[in-house]
Length: 247
View (tube, rainbow, N blue to C red):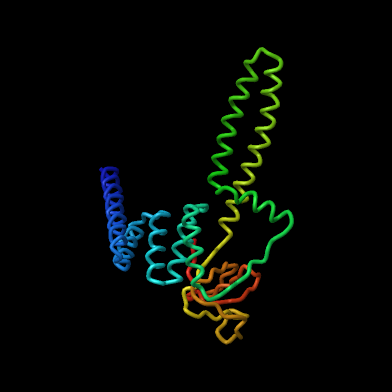
């Protein structure tokens, strides 16, 4: 009985979420962006998160010239679909509305090469690549075991060694990318003006000032303070109420 109730509630939740999503789309087409936002947020309140919902929310806020919410929702959409070109393109348009112009310090050396390589795919994709290669390895092993021709055996044997190497690379890439995803804590400034302090206390002097929509990375947490880092390497402390974490 409990399982039937759970299934019923689950199906109902999906149905309501779908209705909310479609309602939001219809309202967006009519230009009723505030109402569309309420519809999309009702989907999120029902624990039905997706890149599509966050992307549409970002579009609504962008139409209303609300910088921080637009960028935040586009960033949330990218968490689900990291390489989606449409989301990335809209995010770039939204970022043009921000005040702060922060340069990105280019990384060099082996660390950059490693990061560029593993970032080609999401860690889930790397995991599936490893599974696919493992299946292919099994097929090569079967071919090697049952083959009666010397040349075929050599081909299958060499192929198995190559596949083991590729499987190892895929697994390590998945682990590295997963670790990067877990440890990276991006956040968006929601305060119109946010003072970044040298120390985690209100009496500390300002290091620099940021404005809404700017993306930062949280490096440390202390009570209601967050140590943040910018893409140019600048660091400082700011109150948690001034920003909103993406993940």
